Image 1: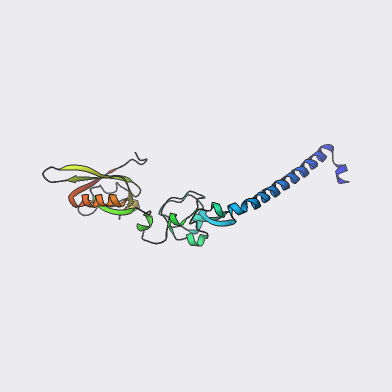
Image 2: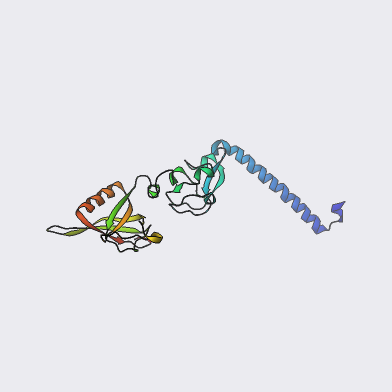
Length: 216
């Protein structure tokens, strides 16, 4: 009775709407059936903690930095944290982009402000070098140059492209000078580089050159 009172155009729209609804139902039903088929392969849905926004290394995660997402178990990264409560309070050892999973390899569960920033396999190594105060900051890249004395003085580049991990006691991330005119730098290095730096520090005067912000 209701349809008779509608215009021909309105009747056509009603028919189209009903057809679209039926098609949507079939699509959803097909998708659900496909999920059921794939479940033995992909696994049941699991909760995974991901970054709620871009977060930089060294950040102590707060509740607003993370959120939960659900994904098939087969697609969950190994070591992914499953509750936001486990993530809050941990320190990131690498940057996270929004939506990236927070895994056990991306966070430090213990350690001080420097140790928590050192990735597995690397070391934090402190040197005293001739650097003007307020010139080098955390995150800068430097080359370490050693000048050896003796009858035949020479200069050698000990290591290149080392990241400044700690900025010492300066304000706003700048590094403060020591009383002897040198500056204390904590650098992120490999164990082999740490040995070379230790040898150079024992027999040479150290200085650093600062690499461009974009590398190279």
